[in-house]
Length: 238
Image: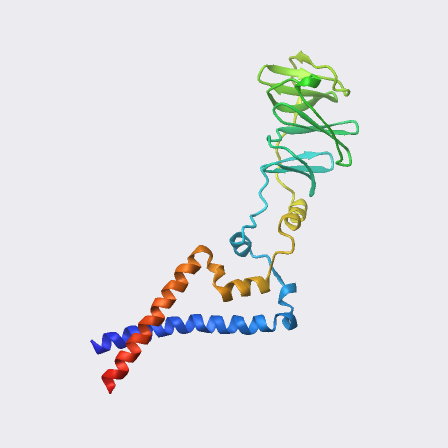
């Protein structure tokens, strides 16, 4: 019985010693955070960013329009790495007409200047065919594919006529270029997570998230146990 009690006493003492060591070292680092400039050093490890709810750069869809990259993240639409507009409907494609960029959802056209400045939104009330599935160009004129067929307009976008054509250059999704992905990463992630914040959360136990409460409870029970067993073993020796 004494051997088992000593074994449990020593094992739990070793576990608690590890946590006490972490608590002590992180406390020392936090005391000298300004001197070590820990608040100016940042971590960009994926698992650290994921732990703090900063997701990877994964756009819903990407399109190339001339020299510009169009991407959508949930409701946010970006031109290159600059926020352009919010759209709660998926972007289905885009084309360039003269000095305009046209993006389409299922029931509206979003017009931008070639510099990426938002101009206006055109809907069915402006003559835009409903239930759009894609957009393309035929000899420089915009063509939309809908559930009721294809429709063509001129560069003024004022009138649409039903047509049946072949050889239309439809807008197709693309992969996000690495250069734009890096710029978007800076937009979404900023500089990352500071070393000081990670050490502080480790010191306070918040790094474990919702499990930190259980960890503290378990450590408390272990401290209670080794205190009782320590007193009991001391009395046995007496």
